[in-house]
Amino acid sequence: MATEKGKLIGYTDEECKNCGRLRVELWENGDKVCEKCNWNQDRGEYDFAMYK
Ligand SMILES: [Zn+2]
Image (cartoon, rainbow, N blue to C red; front, side):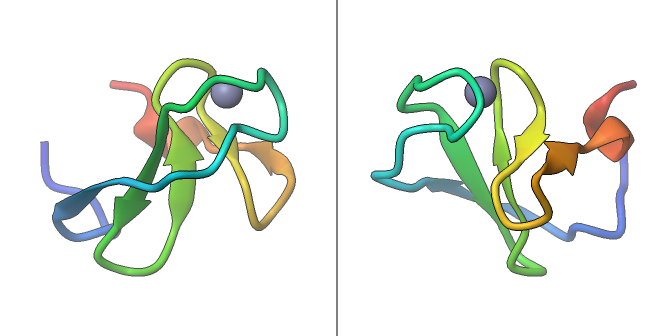
């Protein structure tokens, strides 16, 4: 599924601010979104664009 986020770059070393897991993924457009709970680390809200 193509999204406006571009390509997935990979995991950051950050813990998710919402669920605390080390599953934050960095996207090409700079968005950092938790793989597990879809929390956008910078915007402080769920990133529903991640849901299929
Ligand atoms: Zn999370």
